[in-house]
Image 1 (tube, chains in turn green, yellow):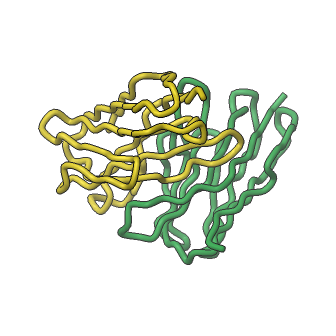
Image 2 (tube, rainbow over the protein chains, first blue to last red):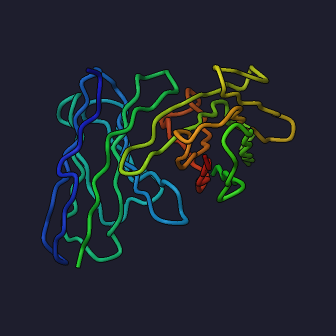
Length: 112
Length: 115
């Protein structure tokens, strides 16, 4: 089944404790992206990757890092999480040159 | 950058009625306009999309219209059913026009279909 998977689905952590949210797709998509969803703000892009070893900032990159060492994986790293990073995070992927983006099920992160 | 406005923020209809959600965008370079449906606890799922060279597209009970001159596009759902209840997002993108296929989303519409 073609899909985007994220782990963990739920995470509660404390300020400053490094964490990684994994994202994996099995559709051989070149393009991958991370979004965060906040009430009243919709979805906003954090980082994106056009292909392996090619990443760039989206609209709200502060406090986040990403890497793209393999085509299928695009982890989101929070080196020192803060409460304002409490949010619902979505990973998405797309076949390069096509518009359709496929979203993962989301990761709900709470930073206390 | 692109800005997408979406209205209304909430919409309640009776089963069988039609529902219309409207969006406007600011960047005339945008050429791809998808609509996503997000059910509780799930990620957004593409339900229909339209590209800038097309004025209207239909898929069973769902249709999308695009007015490039006015920079607005709309989602129309006919014969609504309770399972249509969800949050709907419009989005705009200039895919192929640069290095980022970023989707700029509207803030969403909570649609409730009452049996």
